[in-house]
Length: 328
Ligand code: ATP
Image 1 (cartoon, rainbow, N blue to C red):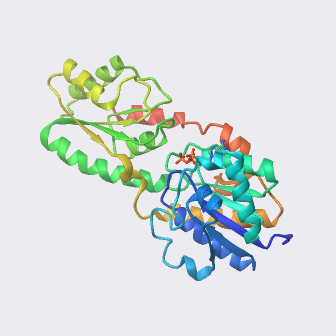
Image 2 (cartoon, helix red, strand yellow):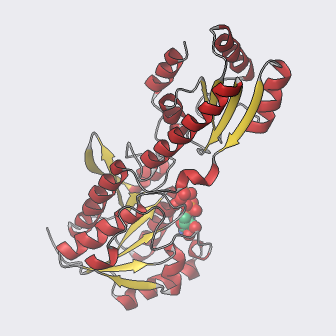
Image 3 (tube, rainbow, N blue to C red):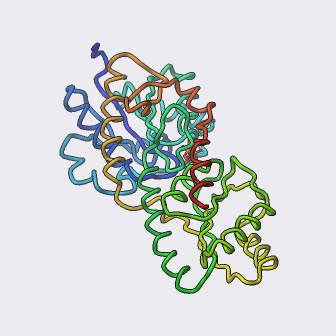
């Protein structure tokens, strides 16, 4: 392991996700383990531009492994999209002696990191932190497992009401471009139908499926809908459409929203964050740059950042079939 780098910066950027704190903790402690200094950069790239830095040691990350959100705060920075902004960021990093960056965030944050690397030849390693699980090169992004558990817990509660009143519930979950949360949480919560952006189920098939479910003796139903579903209607229009065509159903809508991004990270996310943080720092010390660390076949592997950004994490088709069979 070559140890030419003596100071690493860590930041969280884009939307927050449970497990980011555990990843910060891991990066800071891995630096300490290898006698490397670590600088925490507040508010993502915006903090880099403003020089909002703090030296971090193993004790500055006590008691955060169990906390949602990010102690370093996150931000979206328009200024970092400009050459001028990135120049300021680079001069702040140089003044502070920071020689490499660990960027915890989604594909936008990785794109910003790549642009910065191309301009300043600055070593960057990315840790995928987003609940959407929409990044290529890892089977799980940080926060995804926690979000699934949150969604399943809430749908279990909604089911109590649905079955007490013979109601049909449409539950909208996050996932503008990817249906991972809807598909997995839908199966986990026993949803009757799951609508995701990757599949155009169509309105007729939805009605047909609900009628079938009614005929089979089910008196209440849960339909899980990803916010980016391709059926062409938002969840409230969908409710109106189904009520017009199936007046026997009393349809209610529940939009879960930002609660899916919060809460204490699951054990899975804490362990994943710890593993990713170690690999990120040790990859930098091995002289690597422009890679994302991710979980593949239960091993922590490196994927070029460019591929992670451009590739698509595909939905598991087998799960679609399982979901169909489960609604029999
Ligand atoms: P989420 O998945 O939660 O949306 P994200 O990392 O994709 O997270 P973005 O808002 O897309 O979130 O990106 C975060 C930040 O990365 C932006 O606010 C901007 O500062 C920086 N960034 C994104 N794209 C670029 C780019 N092309 N050039 C420079 N910086 C960029």
